[in-house]
Length: 518
Ligand code: HEM
Image (cartoon, rainbow, N blue to C red):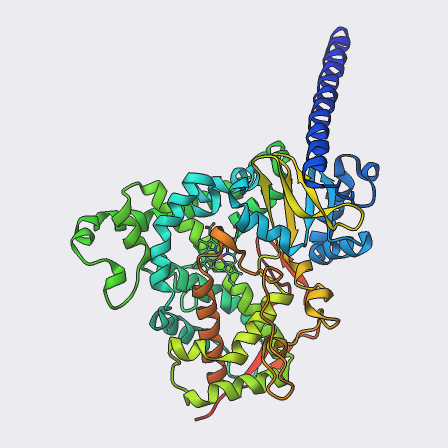
């Protein structure tokens, strides 16, 4: 640059910085005025800053600390310990210049997700990060667009709530066949991720990737997993993500994923007229194919592709992560293994029905406890679309309501909330499925939690696939318990988080399984 131009550049930078400071002052003044008005009207009090307002200017240090903790597989416990250090359940901090309130109060979550649902959106961060991969679908939309997606998809899930056990059986059988019987170690986690990809693609596209039996599906699974990690990271960086050039691997993966799904979309649209003459999938006996229902409702190929990818993202890693955590825990818990074996024994090796699965109290308690200590979606956030309040978090002890200005991001930690001693007792950090069961000896009732237990969210945006996931996880667990009589853990490390969009044990579920001899 010519030296003579330097003063102009310096003047420009000073002007920009001045404008930025003036804008910030203006925001502070107007927000301050509203905050005082809310304090008078509703008794709101300011939220405590994490450690101190000036300790983390711009929150660059906190962001670096978070990224380091993420890399070292301890971001969830770091967040939990920040709450403990602060001695409050809600705090305010700044991350890369953006103010964020973080809470673990069930009352706040109920207000955001249910009571005042309309005052909250997903926030631009999620939408900007995820749209390039997922397009516009249920997981990446708000307001009227989200409502349209939810209405279009809901009937499909109502049908699947009974669970297509026959389809699960095909894939679970492949999984069982893939377990070595020569006493060598297997990482069940790898098989669970293949299982959920195979069953999800069969349910969504009508054709399975068959990754448990062939390697042909690996290309799609790999490209989808890498793209998912890419968008999760972009979401963390927020607007700063734009500073990084798009990397080639990501562009190639995105194209691969889109082309792969487009093949099924074209096929589905090709048989639309025939489908319109037939009965709806939901009324026909036999295999249920999601894309056939979408094709009846719209001819827009991008819309169909987007909804399919949104559901694949929501449903595949989540269920595989739950199964991994369940089997990691089961492999080191001989009492639980014996109890589960006793519960499956009456089926005599036969496939359980949907009703029988629902009646398995110990299995249900085991899944609940796994989702409590290791929630698969351990953190989440929303953005206020108007000035509003939340019932808790204000004042020194966080017991007063707090004012939330329009645009403020409120994040929550399900992980920390699920470990609260005031809700779950002094043994909150211990894995105890029994806490969910009624005790006939003492008359003590099992846990019936409200908003303090939230693995699937609540309110109008509650997980659409909850029943689908629990049925798949329960069915797979029962069939594995029937096929193998003994389990040995081959890993003595504690649970460590591998956090992308979901959380799963970093070291998978390494076990040796002994087949049952009939
Ligand atoms: C253990 C397994 C699962 C867990 C823990 C889980 C958890 C969640 C959570 C916490 C959300 C709310 C996300 C948000 O609004 O920010 C969600 C949404 C959703 N889930 Fe699941 N999920 C699981 C499995 C599934 C499966 C198997 C499917 C589909 C086959 C599915 C479909 C969806 C859909 C479509 C949404 C978006 C709902 C909406 O925005 O209206 N989920 N899930």
